[in-house]
Image (cartoon, rainbow, N blue to C red; front, side, top):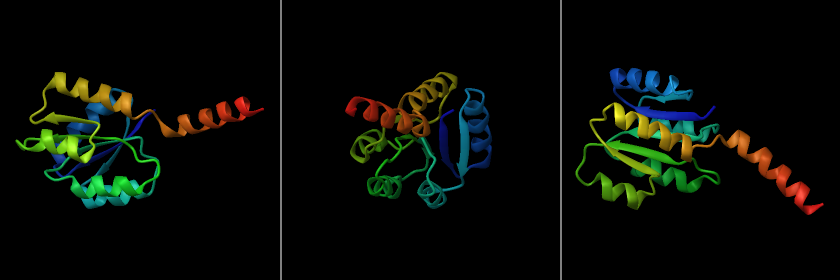
Length: 133
C-alpha cells in the first residue's frame, strides 16, 4: 500500500481527499500545513506527497536534502503554478478545483510515482545480491 502525505490546511478538503484516496487503497497521513508536512516528511516512510498549498518552495527545498525523496503532486489555482511546478520538480500538477476525473488522475499519478519504497528497497538489494554472486 502506497503511503501518501497529504499536506492540506483546509479540514473539509482534507476529509474529502482522505476518503477519496483511502477508497483507492492509499494509506493517507495528514499534515495541516507545509511546515507540519516537512516535519512529518523528515520522519520517513512517505512514498508520495499530495500538497495543496499556495507556495511549495520550502517543501521542494527540503526534498533536495533527502537521499530518497518522494515525488510530490501539487494542486493549485495560481496561474503561475504550472510553470513553477516544473521549476520545483513536481512529479505532476493539477489545477484547482478538482473534479472526479481529476481525483482519479491524481490517484493514478500517486500510484505511478509513489511505488512503496519499503517494497522497492528489499527487491533492489535482492537483485543486486543475486547478480553479484
